[in-house]
Image (cartoon, rainbow, N blue to C red):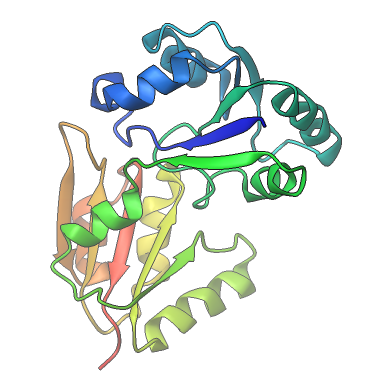
Length: 220
């Protein structure tokens, strides 16, 4: 029975942070499914893997998924990973995992880091219960409602956005009446976490471009 490993990889993109167990399992896989070619090749090289590489990202169509599914179904061991962190958590591709499951392929996890839990761990915010809101919509009206729902929520919310949208996001949430935690470059040497009102954070971080995660305490 074919096995597909869903592998978590370093959120810092430092290959040295990836556990030896994960690299050893990748090395025995003959099919690898990554997100972006350059990042995936670095990981395969670190694992000394000669696996055939396929890519799944936001541009992938179902017809392409079906072709990759055939390759995975025909292999004993395959591995699926995103560029950073744990796959299928905002990153591609829950749909592919579902297709593999329905095909009878055994899905196994290779647990790894997640920027969501990493950001919560350094926020100092109660997250016994929390809601991961994902990425805000780009369309202005839907985006406004997205942030309004977070501001009204009674539970801790976590969301992220693309690195170039940090300043715009802080502007969008400047109406929040409570402080938020924002973590930049998690897992990297220049990692930094700030806790303040969004308007004040905008003063400090305006123009900065970096991967970030925001944690918002529930409304009391």
